[in-house]
Length: 636
Image 1: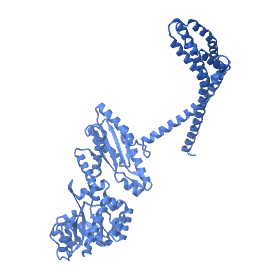
Image 2 (image 1 turned 60 degrees about the vertical axis):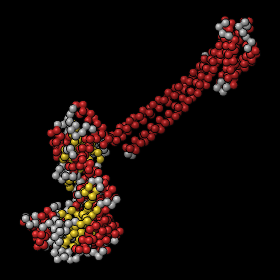
Image 3 (image 1 turned 60 degrees about the horizontal axis):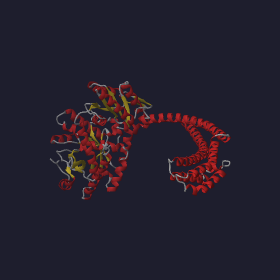
């Protein structure tokens, strides 16, 4: 039996004991109330009220003799006495009174006597002295009897019997109440214990044991109050792990959890009690460090980063986590929690998206750039949904004979609100705000539909090159997405060339190879873009089912001025030939670059010298003039 099961059994027993004790004690208390109400309250109060009415009637007669009251007052007291007798003789609540020995008979006789007095009472006046005295003398026996009844209800054997019954009930109620209190205390102790556990769970992250988001907000509020009162500085560090999603996806969530636990432990050790650390969710942590000078605030993120960078031992090897840290300072960068967190998050955003940075202190102007990114994200989603983006197409030529081999689709966006947006900014916004998948689908669908239109116009030899975002490539959905689009458009897979960057295929070799093989099985060609700028090894390149390489334009630009660049391009071309891969050189802008590439045996090229990107609406006219096999490359 588990601890939780035992706890639930104990709580259930305590709850049942508490409920049973409560119900029984409640019923016994009701017995006491009923008994007291039926005997003391009903009998005692009724008999007392009867004696009071008789005395008031007698006093009214005396007052009439003394001249302090008139006959109307006597008549009023007479009517009230009569009314009281009728209630006692007929009311259900008065039944216990009537059940007393001799009471019912006395009440009936007294009522009959009042009926005989009625005419005499209404004929009284201030001069009826003898009549008043006679009435008082006739009233005296009834007054004496009523008093005796009243006294008997508060003294004698019947009262002692009532007290004994009440005492017995109270004793038993006390015992039951003790059981009730005991079970209640047990339940209260268990509830308090459970509440403490629940409170801990509500304010702490269960995986790392760190304070969670709710707890952090409270700590942050207290820290701000103390910093304001003492006039000290406060630093907020937002810590985010780079590539954590890839760790989860490729190595499993158990490894991801292990990494998070180690990072949490290292953050605690790095602070050494000088601040607070919390986990906001996912791979995002936040650190509060009070009483810092500005110099300390600049050095502190470096120390935290250093503490996190050590290797983490795993069952199958080691892993070194990489993090980025954004920092904001109180009161320099804000005086409220919202401002400081927003600015620290903004600084972290810049650190995460700048490969040369790992830590970043917030600077003025960052908010404006991030606000632009957020606005662009909203506008980009609407532009995708409303088909407001456009594609330009840059031809790729066969360098040997100048014929057109394919078009590379290039994204264009002329926003009504933000103007012309560069492709690099579009892609950065899409990847950061989760729109990369949607954008890739739009580009794939639009470019394939456009190519299908050109095929119908007689240019069946044309192919289309489309750059693929790492996000859609790593999701594992690319092959199914491409297959669905090709089937919907009616385009042969051999007409599609997908360009992936060198780094994309390195993130997870096993899954990369699987994704590429799935695409190659469809008949789609794969080109490795920007080759030479990444970190591919020859053995890695040999494993990838790639059939095209694109030499980065940085090598082409130095081709005729730097012999090492020429030698490197020559080596790439020879390597591609040995692996049966076609080579395309990017960024050809000078005739001598084109000529040198031809001499080195490069198969294809693109660049401003050969042709600039052409808007989709102009491609048809351009093709009409340039689709035939050309004997020399175009000059513009």
